[in-house]
Image (cartoon, rainbow, N blue to C red; front, top):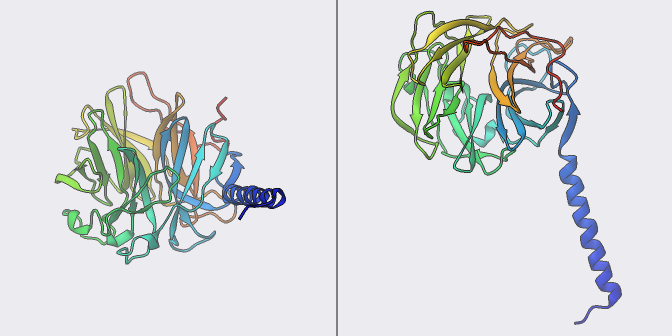
Length: 326
C-alpha cells in the first residue's frame, strides 16, 4: 500500500517528536549543578569517594547516605558524578544498587572503587559482612551488573581478622606492567594480585605491615615519579595517614598524617587523583549544615601538594574547595 505525502509527513513528524521526547527524557535523568565550595555535593549525602580520569573527564563514584541526621548507616545504592572543570558537575542515573548483588545478605552499600581494564569498567564494592563484590559495565557511568554472582572476597580471606566487617573498602591499582592489584580491609590491610579478567584473585593474599602502621580502613594506592603511596584511615575518629615505597609490595615507610579528622565525622575515606595537571584529595566529612554527622556525610575536594623530595604536605581542608579549571 502506498502512503500519501500527508501520511508520510505525519509518520516522519511522529518519529521526530518521539525521538525528541526520548532525548529530553534522557537529558532530564541527568542532574547538573555547580560546586560552590565544600561540601562539593549538597543536594544529597555522599561518602567514600573514588575517582578515575577518562578522556578529559573526572568520574567520581560515591556511596550514598540516604538521610540527614542519621544515627546509623543507611546505604542502599551508589552514585556517579562527572566533571571536566571541577566546578560544573553532572550526576548520572543510579548506576548500581545493593539489590543488584543477590548474595549480599547484609544489604549494606559500603565503600567501593572503579577501575578500567580491557575496555571495561569494574566496580569493586563493600557489602559489610557478606564480602567484596565486583560489577562490570561498558561505560564509566554504568549501568553496572554483578560480574560474578558471588563475592570476590569474604571474611575467610581476611585470615588475621576476627570481626564481621573485616572484608571492606576495596581499592584497585594497575601498575605500569599492566598487573592489577586489590587492597582492602578493616583493622588489617590485605592485598593480592588480580587476574587479567579482573574478577579472580591471582595467587596468595598478603598483609601490609610496617613500623608505625596504625590501620583502620580505606586503603588507597597511587603512584608518582616512581614512588608508591599508600594512604589509609588511621585511628578512630579517623585521620588519613600515608606511607611510601619503591615497589607496590613495599617495604613501606610511614611518613605521617596527611589529613586531620574531617569535621563532624568519625570516619574518613580518601581518593587521590591527578587531573589536568593538578593533584586532588577527595574525602568526606559531616559538614552539611545542620543535617550532617558521622552517618550523613558529604564529599569534599581539596588540593594535594607534594614536597620536592616526594613527600606530601598535610592537606588543608577548606570551605572554598578547589578553583575551577580554565
